[in-house]
Amino acid sequence: MKFVDEFRDSALITRAADEIRRLADPGRQYRIMEVCGGHTHAIYRFGLKDLLPDSIELIHGPGCPVCVLPMGRIDDGLSAARDPKVIFTAFGDMMRVPGAAGSPLEHKARGADVRIVYSPADALKLARANPDRHVMFFAIGFETTAPSTALTLMRARAEGIQNFSVFCNHVTIIPGIRAILDSPDMRIDGFLGPGHVSTVIGCRPYEWIAQNERKPIVVSGFEPLDLLQSTVMLLRQLKEGRSVVENQYDRVVPWEGNIAALRAMAEVFELRPFFEWRGLGFISQSALRLRDEYAAYDAERIFQVPGVRVTDPKAAQCGEVLKGVLKPAQCKLFGKECTPERPVGALMVSSEGSCAAYHTYEFRKTLVPLSARRIPA
Amino acid sequence: MCLAIPGQIVELVADQTHQALVEVSGVRRRVDMGLLVDDPPAVGDWVLIHVGFAMSRIGAEQADEQMRMLRALGEAEAAMTEVRGYGLDDVTPEDAA
Image (tube, rainbow over the protein chains, first blue to last red):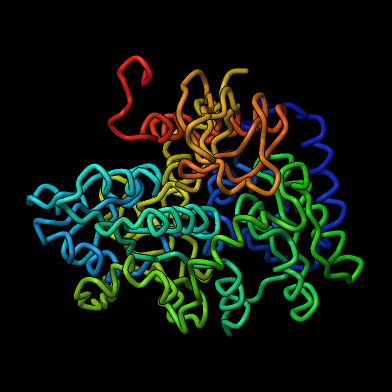
């Protein structure tokens, strides 16, 4: 064991790994998807694959909002930034993400007023401080960030602020999982459910996966022991022919989620009929837009948004990697044209993208001897 | 953005509803408590913060665990950059230290 040594409970980790070996039928191939990009990062960082038997394959899911955002949305959002009146704001994670006409950072270099904010509340604050400008917030994220955007919009409306808008790219995790289950080239035996998204939505929204699709799902924490214990829970269900929703991370995730956060989302947002996910295509009712009551704050209604559609570079195989059909290193561009320093595809941009995680931890492993990677206790 | 950052409430801001002063690894920032209105937290409570909003209450042990996790993932610095960035330019240099 290597990275996991720095965590407490290393005896428990060994025991969980042994239990996984005992439960896994060697004659069977298990395909388990971790939905959340944070889990993907942790799995690579801690070298957890080395603790699992060969019969268990971890498939990296779509739970990285930067990764699933189609390139054209970046161009659409940035098209408004050409107006000198506009201050374009976005989270730092977005700044290096390339659109067809460049990243937000490149637009800034060309003279656009592009600023990093760490909270939608700060974008609103910028609008209050600059009444002669228009502040657009490029909103992105699953249910971990959507309630904050919603509450910010509720505050803007209550205050009657007129120079603030949101370019909404919020997506919801459940339709993404549904699209993967509906995809004909996918076979998944069970899911490791996202941790922090579930603090908002709770565990109930996963019940259809267990009941209708007959797939077990275990909401999991992020530590090595959490991920291994969740895998044990999944394998037990599979062995016993059960499929239910279990909550391994109940020390943080309440079964009902955060009702106040869900209320704020319902007040401000409605489902779009469909939305494009990079690599997965158009998924019905998978994303949020502002309700008519908030039309005055909807950047897509205020500005002429060109509706740019950009196909990924032909050689890049982001879609196949995102669906788990290909491993990151099997993409033709991986580690050559496409690196974390110069990303071509979005999976290489975010540290939660499977390509960036694989490049940082697995790919370099082949270049650095194992002994040099050991972290002293 | 996807990182949940643990912090401890040190003061509830009296003149502004739903605002609390929260300390994350020695850095104090205002964090919005508006998404915890159903069960408002008190001074001394620990919360998980996403993009400047407290999203859930946690125990001290879970806060410690989350911070250790961020460090192990090499994300602690990014998390602190995020926390220091909350509030934009009303941040004095001493606060940001």
